[in-house]
Length: 136
Image (tube, rainbow, N blue to C red; front, side, top):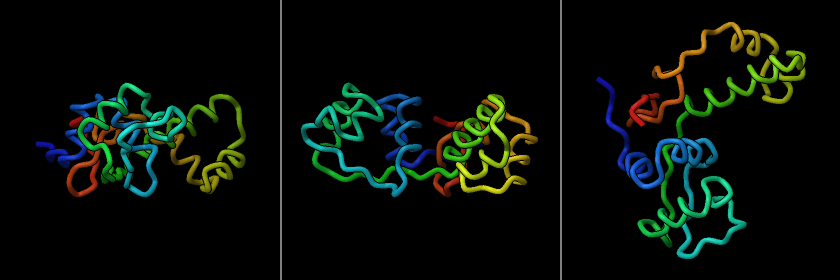
């Protein structure tokens, strides 16, 4: 049985959907996002999830800073997908390693690891303990 989502993550999914919630979680590095009362088209939030989704967040969280669950697994899945794509495009492992701040060995390990879609390692959200789940 998978752990329940943190309340904010569950609310995000309900408000803006799984794909945009994951995009928002992946885009935040500090874990906190200010949701304005009236968003500007140029804001990072609008650029990340679009104006319609931002307006839905504003209806609920407008004028407040909300904590966005940090999910190492979500970030890792996104990073690993980018690494796989760069390698498939013929970029040398050494250049990929530099781009992501990893070693050549870490790049080889990412490329050698099986890619599991739909499992707890593949694109899930954070559970209460920061572990990945695919409950989103």
